[in-house]
Image 1 (tube, rainbow, N blue to C red):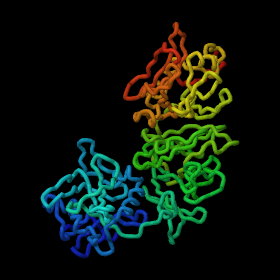
Image 2: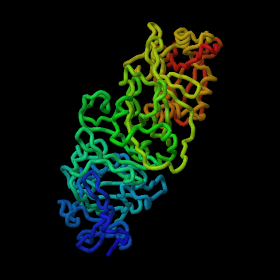
Image 3: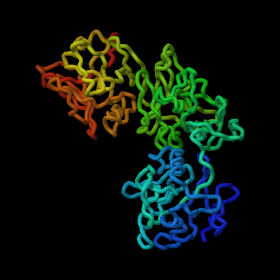
Amino acid sequence: MKKLLSCNESDGNCFEDERDGQTYKTTAEISGLVWMAENLNYAADASLCYDKSAENCAKYGRLYEIKSYYDSKNLCPDGWRMPDTTEWHSLFESVGGKNVAGLHLKSKTGWQEENGGINGIDDYKFSALPGGLAYSQNNFNFMAVDAYFMTSSKVPDGDNKYVVNLLYNDKNAIFTSYGERVFVSVRCVKGTLSSSSSVASSSSVKSSSSSAPPSSSSFGSSGSFRFNHDGEVYEVNYVTYNGVVWMNENLAFNHKSTESGHVYNNNSNQDAPIEFFTWSKAQSVCPEGWRLPSSKEFKNSSGLEEISHLNGKNKNILKGHFLYKYWNEKDYGGMYWTGTRNEDTVDVIMFKQKVEEGKIVRVKVDDQNELSLLFSVFCVKDGGKLAETKERTSTTPITFSREKIFGVDHMVVQIGEQKWLAENFMYDAEGAAVCNATKVDCSKTGYFYTYDQALTIINNDNFRNGGWKLPTSEDIQTLVAAVGGNHYKLISYYGFDERGKNEFGFNIVRTGHYENEEYTTSYSYEACFWRFAVKEGYQDPSVCFPGGGADDVTYGTTTKSGERYPVRLIWTDPNNH
């Protein structure tokens, strides 16, 4: 008989199965449900131990034949039940979605690590172990590799049952199905599943208990707290780090609002949670006792991402942002307001899912058009004295702004001492620029120019005037050096190359080009632009940022007639010429 000495029934996170006296650890309540944190090990009919070994039953629990429990015959202890697919799906969503549920639900040890295998982080104490399955009473597979959990849900128009599968080499969780003679593990559940309006973290929590936030002294290293907003109660996760309590998810409200400064997640879907805020609204949206973080607090929080969800690694909370002209980087990045304002800029925390640490950037605000900047919010509160200095590694300063060039709004980014367009040039000179909207999205690619047209439009062959110019090879080399010598920090990861990080908001996208006035998507692993150089004969100078694993930016020339590339401009101070 399995008896867990580590399970202390007085702490409320374990229970005893009265049928055989075995005890089981349990999770805290997750969206209204409490789950067994160990596999069922009750010696019921049509059950067996992996390899018929009692040691395997003690560690992984028993495997149960799907056929014998096809009609949801209750296998679980009194008051518990076998979960259906809806309850499993709710669990996945509560821990960040199916794409990362495996990472959060798998135990920290015990999973095969060879061939790309990964253990979990087990931050919800579900502690899933890879118990494998049996195709018959003598055919066992996948112990220490994969986990399979029976559901009570049948596959429509078939004899199979849905089974939850966690894989050794993946972060996700999947639903699969198996026939009636297969043996798999069982996790039991109890409680009532919260409705969509009562699930934590973008929804209100229905509760008769006090909704007052706990005091600073009652905040532990991590957990959740509740607060009241416009008559509804919300529950938000937090972590405490170096003397500051940080919300561990985006602040979001699930009710419709006409109040200025509230924006829905795509600026039109009013059934979705409000997840973006203007600068002025962000200053007053935090719960009582909470506030926006200062840039100083964030700069002194190196290591915060390792214990939190804020950079989207452990749980993807990154919802993108609206920066001047476009909605950007949903699921790939996020920008968060701080409470630090400078003369005409606000310090903003910028996270990228493929970048380990967030960074402080500056964003020029437009007080006349607040809806041009819509960012997420997480709030903080004092959690005690700073334990130690945890300064982040200083990075090249970044400032975003918007400027009119030839009457057209363009996004601009200053990286170190250089100021560049943060998108391709969008000036549609009559009879010059080309953009075939049936083949490419002009708002993403910009317009395409011959080299002579580009020079004529911006007068780049007369450097003494300063202003916006075609970059030289030296300008580009300075840019790449400023971001650490890795051009993948400048290129986009979606629509270009999975190695791209876009860490500095430079937003290089793959565009294709024109040859003999015909658009082509060749050069599929690079993005090319015109650069300024003294022409030799008919050789027009270009620069290409490669993807596909190539190491270096390339500088070349072309002699093809009618070839057109996009343009990226750099600002040259007229006072220096």
